[in-house]
Length: 62
Image 1 (cartoon, rainbow, N blue to C red):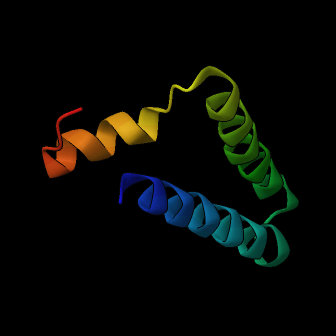
Image 2 (image 1 turned 60 degrees about the horizontal axis):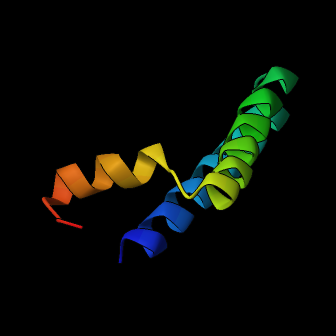
């Protein structure tokens, strides 16, 4: 469940930042790059801040 939420949140952030880059300011693409870099980092290191936040929010134990 946590993995599906992380993917959904990341996808939503990317889509929102693309819309904001088109409608508001091109610099919103930096946020897209940040999300992508975090996805890449978490796949390499197996550490994800969003996973920690969601586990605390939903009170899920390891």
